[in-house]
Amino acid sequence: MSAKKVTPTQNEVFFEDHEIIVSKTDPRGIITYANDVFQRVAGYTEEELLGQPHNLIRHPDMPACVFKLLWDTIKSGKEIFAYVKNMARNGDHYWVFAHVTPSYDANGSIVGYHSNRRVPSRDALDKIQPVYAQLRDIELQAANPRDGMNQAFEQVVKLLEDSETDYSNFVFNLSEETQLCHALD
Image 1 (cartoon, helix red, strand yellow):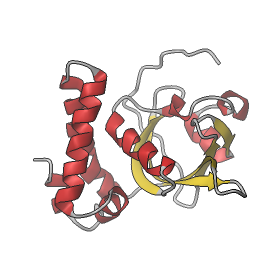
Image 2 (cartoon, rainbow, N blue to C red):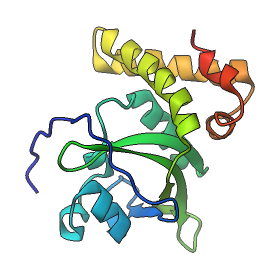
Image 3 (cartoon, rainbow, N blue to C red):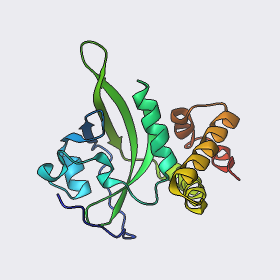
Image 4 (cartoon, helix red, strand yellow):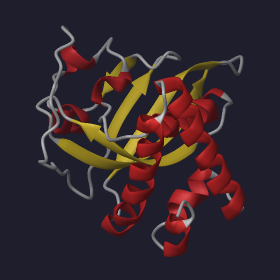
């Protein structure tokens, strides 16, 4: 598939509460499976998705530090939950509440990753979006992307330490505790 630059739109697309977006990747994040809900919401066919990096659907509004945290967590063999803004093929966006887990072979080695994405709570999205915007601003204000990502990642680590929680619990608590989203203020 050719790497065509897509411009994000302001249009949000949705999927049903009972639907689950499912994908599987190899250890490098290359898509090996994409269910029909994923294909429909993202606007790609199965043939277009298979063999592509999962970051094909990364929305530019998402802070890179969140993906660093995600990858660090799953590569260490742990699961993670996260709110993610994805971009469909046509530039529209859709939010998901992702649960990403490592997949293992019989010897206990990670052979890939499995992700189930559900419809997120609008209340939680209202709380995480300002946090993500602040992290993205930190990333964009740095002299180079790597420095910006590292500075924003340090803010995430501080936020979690100050909240005495891990990222998965932080995102679960967004529906219940609004004070957590003000921790970066």
